[in-house]
Image (cartoon, rainbow, N blue to C red; front, side, top):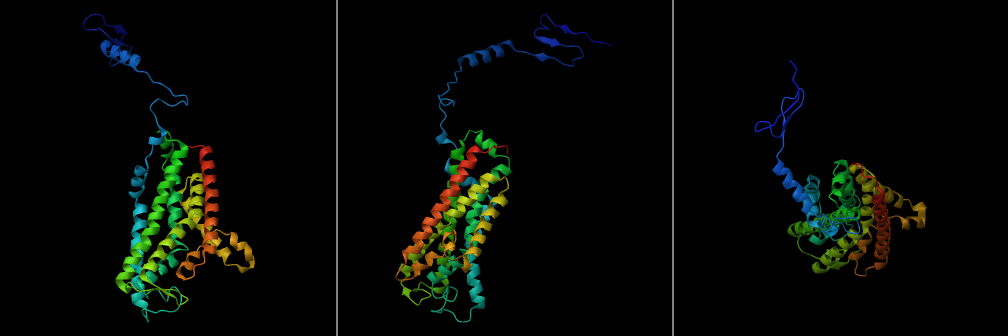
Length: 328
């Protein structure tokens, strides 16, 4: 049996249209259409000279507080910070299990670790400075943009709309704050653990010089500041790799490998003065702070080197991200 199209007229058919073979109809409400039309006529969407809608302010997008909370809620951030808290306890247990002559006051960094709480902090920075700390900075900066790209959420952030330069700045700032917090957290916990186990005695240097506890803590604070500045080159490189790839592991691993390669080349004495241009050449310049006669020249060179490398890679990252075709 065929059904012919019919338009209802009258009370039963008003506004209902049935097509051939349709099993139902489309009902329209004339009064609703009128209301929508009136609302559309009264809405005025003004456009600023730069093409944005009036009232939109780029400076209000992606607040740093929101980005920090997002990063702190991530499992990798929690695991990293948790490990930094745990590391001093692992070192104490290691010394307690294998130590034969406690409270030595001569030798190298490892031999002097149990002389006082300050010396324990110095050892912690010494053993973690070559690999662990650069890896943490590379993790925070290398994962920041690449992870958004791997999750396919980067294009939605930019469509929010968050300007590209602001997105990169906010991501870098959040990563920098987390990195500095991690670099401060480790020696702070190590100081508390060291004082609890080995006391608040004098800080003894490998040269045999001794300084008061307060002077030792002040020196540690300066050392942490120098390490934070020195690792700026790792942050810049990791950020550049982060905007260049969709693989977070590649960005983080690339920055860590560059740090390891630089340290290996720095051990080749045949390179002579060329080693001075390696970004890791002045990594341990903070050790001069343990001496009563501090040589600021090495730390000044290390600071300049780190800032130069860091600024160069950061500018490359900004340029790359500004021109990148975001597809993920």
